[in-house]
Length: 325
Ligand code: AHR
Image (cartoon, rainbow, N blue to C red; front, side, top):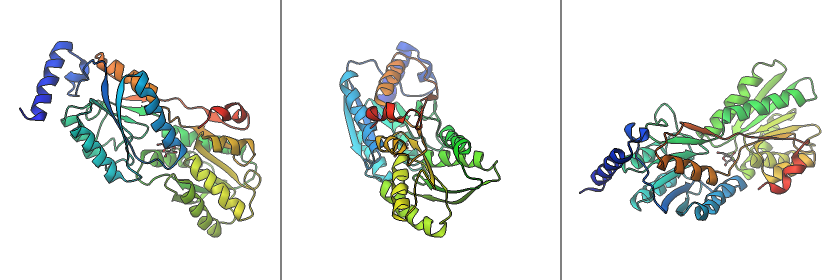
């Protein structure tokens, strides 16, 4: 029997034995087992957030009885697709995928489903017009990125001391869900305030060094900038370096605001160089374990398992810096 037909037969037999709603909707079921072969194709490992996320999966593997197959696509969506395909060929039981960008990973999601492998998107999502939770993959586990951008904008409006805000925005990876959504959340709030202007918005690819380089260039075109909004802490730290090199005083004559909650960002807040970072938790391992347990028991999983995020400012950064990554 061909692999796919065999998987179909197994899925049907399982569906008949447990009668789960998930299976009835056409999603691959997850058999109850003592150990699972779990796929986690990481997109890159160039920043503390990604390293913390991978470590969270590695740390969970023992507690949750996983044989973890983890890869690193080194910043290439094409390599991440190839990594998923290789995991499908290796016969993983379940896939936890953080898709680097919204569109290129969709065919891989479809192939995992066709191979009978339940797939959960973690931290980032794919284009919801093409692939849907509950239909093409089981569920999305992650933060509300639009709300993160909105919260940064609201905090900025409440805490900016000047009359007119001249804003530079450093965007995340082009085509990724956090870059799209964090921009939308922030821009929508800022657009309602006449005293605030976003004079430039450019990608720094979620990377510290690129954030620094882009900030250096944008500073020359917009020397009057007094607010920098970075879509993640790494780019915010890069921007602070560029500002200081140019003789500016972050925290004094420029307000730097961002998202994630890394140790370096909390330290920058303590040092008075950054105003706020809205949390975006990378610790998905325990949540993945809990949700797959529910799925294996036949529960229908909600399409979006939402992660609640805190906010770090000078009021609480010192309390949390030691536990940060
Ligand atoms: O998808 C979440 C984002 O990706 C984090 O904010 C960022 O640091 C990471 O690379």
